[in-house]
Image (cartoon, rainbow over all chains, first blue to last red; front, side, top):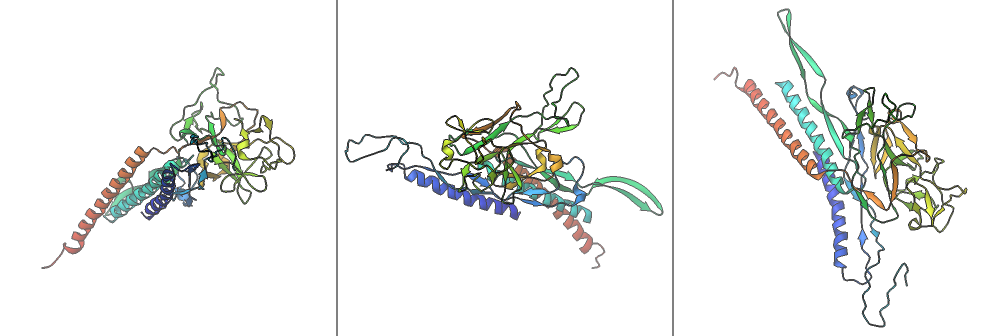
Length: 103
Length: 310
């Protein structure tokens, strides 16, 4: 029972982090030059519970031992570098770069 | 009665383990390349009972004294292929037919190639009626102890020593079964184009390693992927080398294997089925709980009420 609760709790923490990043992105919808952050998940280190040799019965597909996962973690968020849309402001002090490059 | 208590307890433990496995599957609905783990239940081995009465014995029959989770099997069905257009994202897409011990594909009496059909666990039968599994293809990596590890979905990074690695630091191996070290100092992952056979190109020219050889990522074919275990971070380790039967893929072979750059494979977990399985695990758990309660009440009568003198 505890395994399920721990696994779900750990996953919820990672999902909360993702929600934080998504809301950060949404908050910056109108920020000039903002590049959105994206995340992806990875599964956590699984344990293998050992089984005694008596359990190695015929018809078994996998090797002896039962795998137990404990949920997910968020891997490092990365900046997407897609170009945003250019808007003509007609203000001569506004400068933007089209393509790869930084001032 | 007491036997019944233990049987019901075994039932509850089984559902608990099933619940744990399904919870982990649901947690990993968004993990790229995650393969669903299916818990397989099995009855305890049969016990024969006979009743011994005044010297004679009558055979009653056999029964299973419980149930347990025998194993958790990974389902290697492909997840949805998602285009991310990011140069770091790498995945392998394959649909191989198994080969016999000599390495030849299976043929029927006329010599035509047979296409073996596989079930959800990748199991099929060869023309002799024996069990065969669908082989899976993996990138070959080294962990920190220089042991081989296998992965199907990876993010490519270049470290300070110009080696190709995954996000967690597992090193990609090249055709010489050694970690790949780039020759060029300035190459970034975005500039590298990885071809369908795993070869690295930059602007159409071969990317070379420090000894001047062209680089191709090492692909391994695992003939029975059920003898591998997931270690976490998308990486698999071999649990039974002989039965997993791993071979290096020769670039010259024409096989339905593709290394896709800029693509990611989604998890193959079906959320609806997982929720149903979770509910079913809970209800069976409750049923076993009721059995224990009933047996307990019967026992209570035996202990407290029979032979009571008032």
